[in-house]
Image (cartoon, rainbow, N blue to C red; front, side):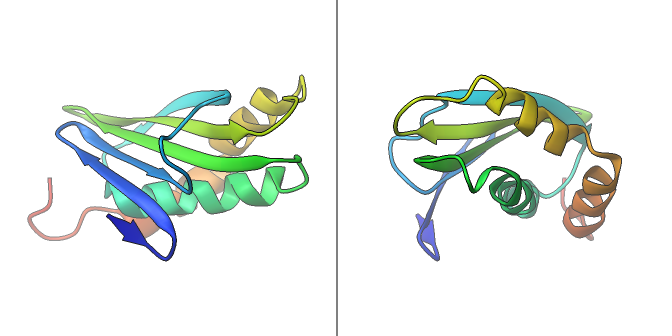
Length: 116
């Protein structure tokens, strides 16, 4: 399934958003957030990660949102065609742990109505 050129791989425990298939994590960081709409969350994280890393040559973002009982586990990063800079994972972690980003993502992706 694609949405504006993005592949959305729906799985029983979550989803993966990627520009290229198969999704590949040459560089990554992880975090945990409160339960939220996985697709909205993935797009928000992808946008902020791209803004932070757009100067990384050959970078293509991938975001995996794993839905768990009380929260969601986020794996963000992506494919890098070429050399992966040594500080790339740190840059992704900074995006994921930024309190302003996290609050905005959760506001945008909050579950509405009967969603679980």
